[in-house]
View 1 (cartoon, rainbow, N blue to C red):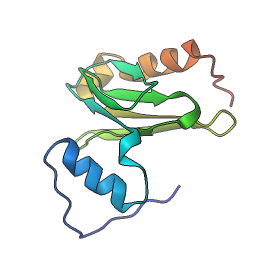
View 2 (view 1 turned 45 degrees about the vertical axis):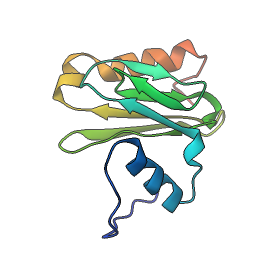
View 3 (view 1 turned 30 degrees about the vertical axis):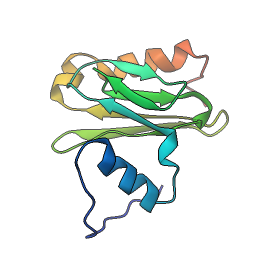
View 4 (view 1 turned 120 degrees about the vertical axis):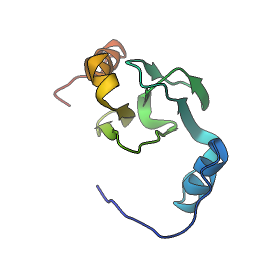
Length: 118
């Protein structure tokens, strides 16, 4: 995994800020799964790009779409299965933890046939 920081100014005005950032790092903004976070326990399995209301985590089976979350004092949790190329990204704060966002994420991964051992 590579983590980098930048002093470049990216707009943070909703989805347009994500599009600027995603484009700048060489990914396709038309394949962006953008959750409208509400500090919930809800995780969405995404089969198409777009905006996903009332969602704090997105899982892309086969890695067909770029997953995104916004964080400030919360943590992003990254998930990947190198065999199936499934990826996920979860916005994890104290409210989400209380609402079982991580167990919900694991259950969602299992529902699509992923193996936790992979």
